[in-house]
Image (cartoon, rainbow, N blue to C red):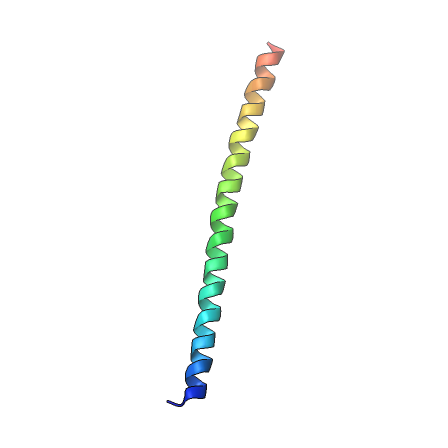
Length: 53
């Protein structure tokens, strides 16, 4: 294996790892964001029903 092909392989591995990390980050942030929104909405609905009664 020559030096050039090794560097190319290393570059490809770095790109794949960085893309995977970004995807994992987006998925984790997205799931926590929707969870927060769901809790926020239920809190609003509780307050709304309490005010109406």
